[in-house]
Length: 205
Image 1 (spheres, rainbow, N blue to C red):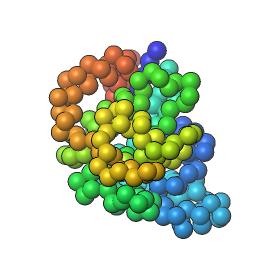
Image 2 (image 1 turned 45 degrees about the vertical axis):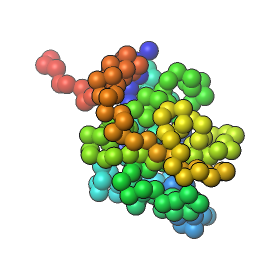
Image 3 (image 1 turned 90 degrees about the vertical axis):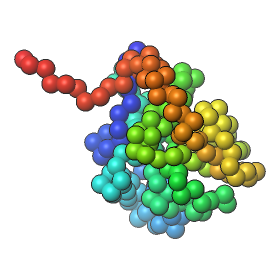
């Protein structure tokens, strides 16, 4: 089973689940979100947001493929690009952290370690770019897939609670504690993903 994680761009945005392609929960503040939904333009707002973040900051997500079938994704960005984060009771995200916004794996592909691999891949990307930590708002009362990730899942992949709350705790993953992953992650990713697919090399005809 071939697995690969590919940077999220406008070219593969259509590989996100349909409801996620037209969701701007994190990308806009609550008032702008409602206005976009009312105007029927959330998909355009999503494209504009991804385009702006790619141009100004760089890679802000990964799409997960298994045998070339898109099965999940993860999105992350500096909190300055994530207006919704200020609406949470446990905000703000720490100034030295990048915010893990959301992630999703199709139900039939859950339980295969893809969630942990996604977090490791994001951590590896951010370590290369000089960042110290990832933070996320968790949902302590999570019952079904939604824009806010279940707190239990974040704890299971290495996050620690830094600001408790009965519903929306803020959790943090220190990237320096993952420095020892570097070699382990390379091996794990190779095994789990069947080698992370980089840009294919051109071969002579």
